[in-house]
View 1 (cartoon, protein in one colour):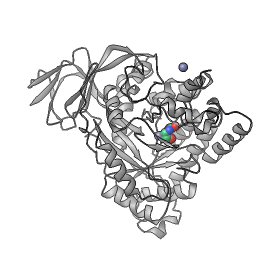
View 2 (view 1 turned 90 degrees about the vertical axis):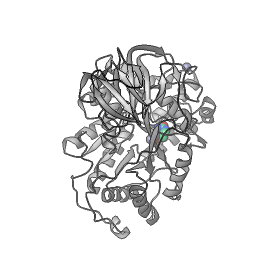
View 3 (view 1 turned 60 degrees about the horizontal axis):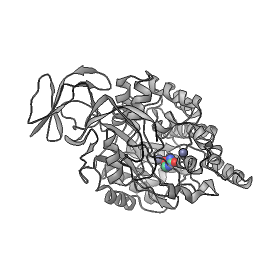
Length: 484
Ligand code: URP
Ligand code: ZN
Ligand code: ZN
Ligand code: ZN
């Protein structure tokens, strides 16, 4: 049984050309003119692109006294409906919990996934046990990324001591550290002051997390990575101050990656001043939405290559959950959805407006992150032998985004009412059609875990626990040599 995607224009991160694609056993087996197979999918008038990879989701995550409301089933169904064929979620040990135990919890949840997935492992505390388990996570479990929260004081936050130790361990293991870069101590003080002054509404969330808080932490994370001799990936880069730090580090030769979210690119801070409390609270996330100048900076970064990836940080809470924060904005669960809308919103606001090219669209939604995560060309490529994770993209198909028709399990959509032009005609996950225009054919449990091998480690010096506390010489030979 084979499927041929016929009559479309293939768009990759480098090339645009007309050819058919033949798929068999979940892989691309042939690319060329006039192919035939058992089944044919009509791609005429469409662009055929690598399926999107969203490297930043929080599905069914315990957070701020509740659980995010999209699980691996509804979340990956939403992903496929929008042309995304792989997600990378965060396994989150609570401080004191074993990394391996947390990973088992995430393994159990992910059995329901409709598309392929992988995990980043969060470092939320530091000990000899964590140090040792990191090696097992990389070598046995196929996870080459570790996430560090510089914010959420008293919960997930790690301090500089812990971060420097963990970064050095990453360097030794050939792993890439990821950072949520906001100064959690400053945020906590600003929150307390705002509340004491009687500012308890959702707009105070934005005041408590100014761009300087993010710029400072981004700089600090980059400098610490430089001293540890590892590359670093800054998640949800939302402002010029953070982008500037990333640009400067890259110009010096460091491997630093920045990930704007589709929400920050297309929604601004005025959302928090909406008189409807629910409207504003539904958009509370960290970092908060910024003004147009920051948005312009992010778009410029995508076009110039100083920012490499567009993600969602999909972390969806219902209105009822958001209302935990009535009277105290610090209790509004932080997070917004976006999995279904990332690709159509980026196409509509990026490609259709001329801000980025089609090839750059493929790079920032799929290929760049596949290289950064060391899963290219299995994912993120249209090449013989690659997984047939593909989207047949109809640039003329249009819809108005609405919670009434979305796949996500929550009762609203932060992009409600926005019209997008450019949507999947077909989404294929390892060769299986999961979406055919508005018809959802996803199969619960079809998704498989994608193993990600470590990069060649830059140092073997940190193989024992006692050595990790000793600072090392600054070096810039980091990993990965992804070419991104
Ligand atoms: O507000 C956000 N971003 N919620 C999800 C957790 C995180 O910080 O990424
Ligand atoms: Zn975060
Ligand atoms: Zn509203
Ligand atoms: Zn996140």
